[in-house]
Image (cartoon, rainbow, N blue to C red; front, side):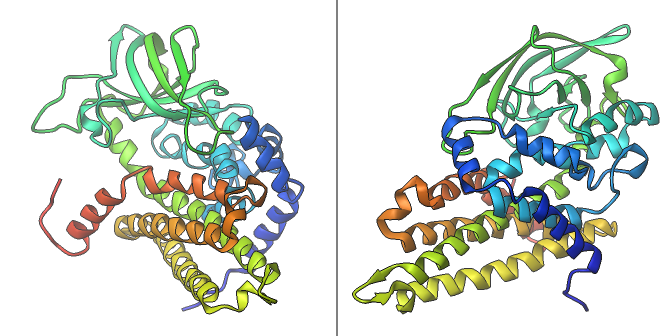
Amino acid sequence: MNFSLTDEQNDLLNSLSNTIKIYDDNYWLDCDNASRYPIEFVDTMAKGGWLGIAMPTNYGGSNLGVTEASLMMMSIAEKGGMTAASSIHMNIFGPSSIVKFASKSQKTNWLPSIINGQTKMCFAVTEPDTGLDTTRLKTKAVKNKDHYIINGRKIWTSTAQITNRIMIIARTSERNKKMPTEGLSLFYTDFNRENIEARIISKMGRAAVDTNELFIDNLKVPAGDLIGEEGKGFSYLIHSLNPERILVAAEAYGIAKNALERAVKYANERIVFDRKIGQNQSIQHPLAESWAKLEALKLLILKAANLYDNNLPCGVESNAAKYLAAEYGMEICKQAIATHGGMGYAKEYHVERLFREMMIPYLAPVSQQLVLSYIAEKALGLPKSY
């Protein structure tokens, strides 16, 4: 068993580091303070071909795995936090349903512009009154000859302010209590602002990447924008859950590593009572524990990614990686602030920003409690609790 990265993976990370090194702490702090989308960074990533890291080569991608995508997102989050990661997250994870279930002509028409960055897409799943119970969503798509008309509301949809395409799941037939996952359909269509109002949600962190509530009023969607079969959208959505959890875990890992590195640097520089604070065990031990947790977390993330890339069951590992990434990430970011003392509360030291951003992988895309329920059922064989 070899735990080392391959030469190709190391080359990928070195190339990525050279690509994004121009985006320093001040850049990310400015984006956060000004609530400004990091368009320069996104354009750089698109021009370098990074947005297509896991997409097929015949559409302009690199055809690498979730393992390589995870390594990339770890490095990006370590450099620019959740602002950097979220600005391209949808391009990395979002098209997976298109790759797997769309027709050849749809892939040809849609994927190249996603990969080269010309298309900005958002993903609309969650609704105000349904939360994680996706089968009860109320947004409806009614077919009328060669098109559908969609009406409803979505919430927690990121990048809707700058997007020009939307992937949306809607109910195309009434909910069947015996088969509640049937009757949901997945569409990828134009974000028509005459029929979609996107209201920004003011939130705790990651102000640079907008989050929105959508009000959809008679959105006309060509029948050709339906992905796969009508009524099978939930199964298509499920297909993308594991890679998203893996990528979110990778992003949380990167943020936590960023926070730990800042804490260690400060502990080595700050002098109190004629000695570096890093000489005190009360400072050393929590940081050492943080390092150990990150090492273990990285192994679990890469194990989950490797299982996925080899078409092996990975639901438990993917969810466990997301859970530990969120738990460890929150602890490590909190400890980084504590290590800085009062300066940890100052924006110029960045750790307070990382702490705020870490709340995102803690809360999304699935709650910590639901993950534990899933693991209890699938890994331990306990009765289903939800």
